[in-house]
Amino acid sequence: MWKTKSGKTEKTRLELCDLCAGTFAESEAVRGYVPDSSSVNASNDWFDGLRLITACSEPHFAIMQEIYRYRPFADEELWAAKITRALTTGPPVLTIEELGCRTGLHVPEIRRAIAWHNARLGTRGRREP
Image (cartoon, rainbow, N blue to C red; front, side):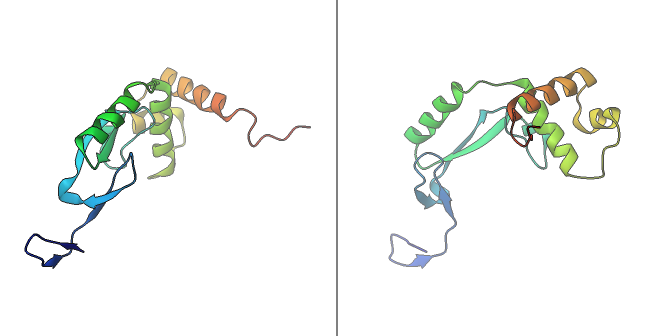
């Protein structure tokens, strides 16, 4: 609940700043997309590789843009995220060709994404003999 200038209270949806974690009214939000290879959209693949950020002010939004500007964009990371989405939603994928159809990726890209993913896993989850 927020008090308006007239002193009346009204229900307003609150937003959370991605930088400072402060809360503020939805109408005050500063939003925009930044490149992020770890981000895929659940319902619209046109937004894959873009992350929607929300800030409480223009200065905080500019700081968030700078943070993402210096984050490396790895195609393999984006492809791995697309593969994860395909494997965790919809019907099961039985072949690499089906995975290509579901993700829009070619087999070499799928293989590179899997290699990228496995390299980041390292030894986590592996048992030493």
